[in-house]
Length: 362
Image (cartoon, rainbow, N blue to C red; front, side):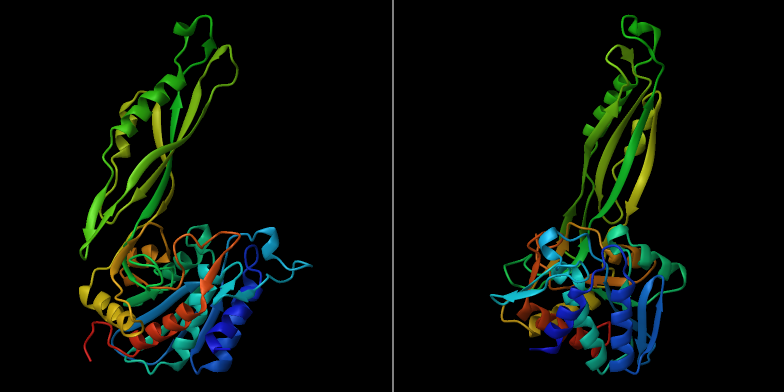
């Protein structure tokens, strides 16, 4: 059994959907025992540093997971089920993202870094980047980062690509207010549902944001996903809310402020997960070259549809790409799994990148 596989099995077996401390302790303990790095474990996660140089390169992941399906929990509930079959490792967190995390840990230990090498495993990624945001607020600011979220299987099945951009998500609510009245005399009130419907018409007319990042086209979206209003069949409603899901792209947003041109409508942002765009073509090429050297197929620059902690890092000034073992459709499922050979490939990619200058110079 390879060391990356063994470490992945150990990390995956530790429950971390409600309480991430045990998984964080395991990551920190391994780093302290296996490396000479300076290791810090706090409420943002685990951060370790080794090497020196004018630039810093971070290998970034997270050790929290979404709640497992019943069949992914062992009897007694104190461990997750981890099974190996048909060249894949099955279990909650194998793809998202303890497999790539284990690959990054081994690469962090084994690399002869060309610059300061940083390892970070954050908490709360599944809750909107809680740990990454805390670390950034406390001064976490690597120059470059490879975030180990999934990038395998985008250009072709089994190929580990390099994502140079991903979408963000802005979730918001349109709050329409009016004045209640008896439904037999609707003109005596102001119907909040009608106002909400007028605002929905504004949303339907908005253009979806789009952009291009290092040759990859990225198109966002905006959609109404929920509507709720009214209190009784015979009462003109005084309040109605509309939920809007917007997938953002770097530098562009849908003009949702226009909904407030409707009388009685307020637009409230509930969540804003930032998109990511790699701002350094040379760094993207360095990672792509490492990916190319570790597989027979030809990896490509790709764009991901999902937000990751790379968005928070990029917004704070870190040059990022995403490169990891998970394939589309694996994360957050009852059948979650990851290809074992791809885990080992990712360890080699991370190590090769760490041993190259981040800008691609020798």
